[in-house]
Length: 461
Image (cartoon, rainbow, N blue to C red; front, side, top):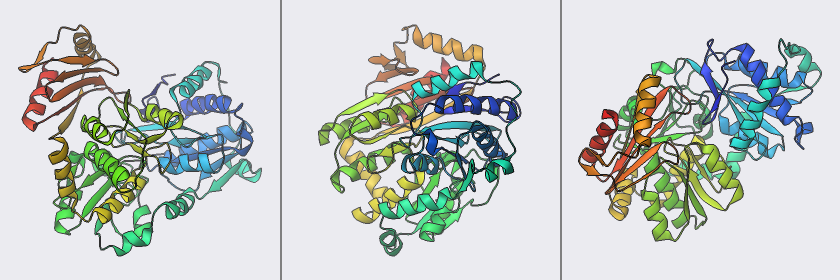
């Protein structure tokens, strides 16, 4: 069994390691873990995204859990990951399972576990499920779907409407509709499709079911959002919003069609929550996220803490501490006024509200951040490489012999998650992906030229 939980759940290539047989094993281990949960009599929620076979995988998970006597609230159609998290928390359930490989290429699918608190399973919870894998039953045949429906052990549930009703309590939707703000939304063919049009009546891109995602990875990065950028300019939109395959990550385009990366979105939302919402609390960022947040927290008098990469680490702190906002470089951000969870749709609405309240174009708001806290340019490069080369680079980083990067002196380093090298007004991070067989190179500096030089130095290793 090639089953290993990574940064956020178990992911694998469909028909290679992500098979029906392995999915049964993981579902059995999950059932065993949740069996002793104090809320297990209320059941577990199961959702699925827009990927190839996701609906069939979702039904199979539901069948396995229900065959073990667990009541399952199964989504009646594709849903976002946050819709599953919301149901787990506010329907008072033991937890949830989401079938998704998030932003990964189309050949992948995955299995995310959600806690009863409405967020990603903690590392300790995941390791308990992994332990149960060793002892799962072999050749287990779950009861047929229709029989479990008849017994009331599987209940088809409209999670999208449940989520919409919740959103209506959090946002003044009419204020957004009547503001004159012109918004276009790109679901990237993911499971967030149709929602924003239904809620706000706005224009949407890629809101049809296409498990190949138009041959573009469903990750809201600049290189994947060229059509959105073009449409923003052509249609004179004030903002373009984009979410990933399971709609828990956010990306944006300003009114000029320029990409606004997750670091700037995180920074803008922190500013908005602090200045306009008058909210306070700790700020949590993952290891690969902008240093601009540190400068903002210094000014605002807020505590900031850094975690390894993976929103599960942020989620844990959101439950333990009074966290105002927490997030990661990949566009996953959680806020105090919502769940301890990433949610691209929620954040998109918050960004729209922000534009209305500041009454300034998005490009101007981004520029004002850099004027106030200094230029922070960023880029990430993902490199598919051999295991041998990957280990060679990581070992070189570990050696402590890297004293300069393309002429820039290394003044400090950290190995919290991968290897991060600090230079004056910049940094380079090298780490292996937790969900794909690739090496990631991240860099931030006070100029794009320096960013490029730092990245090249990393790749040259």
